[in-house]
Amino acid sequence: MGKALKIILIALLATLSGIVSYYFVQGWYNVIPWAIAALVIGYTSKSRRNSMINGAIFGYFLFLMYILLGYNGKTDASSLIGFGLFDLFFSLVGSIAGVAGAYIGNLLKSIINKADH
Image (cartoon, rainbow, N blue to C red; front, side, top):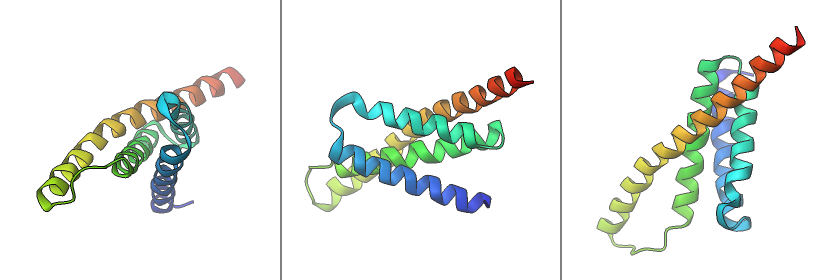
């Protein structure tokens, strides 16, 4: 699978995860499927660097969609611009969380591979 296609699929998976977890999973339980997805992304990545990039993309789009769906504020232009900036920058926190999860997933893969040899 090409690198660009994998990045697009990860972004779509993150967007879908954000939508599904917003509508069907309430409370802090959202963290469980998000963490599992980040671990899988890291585990399936070819290198540690790729796992961190893929995890960042996953976390960013996941937070972006989840926060966007939860917006119930005003619809005037200044409120929307303020919220949009908040959403874009807070999604960086999701990006960091995605990097951490994918890094751990990739680390688990290297531990398992060493144990097999």
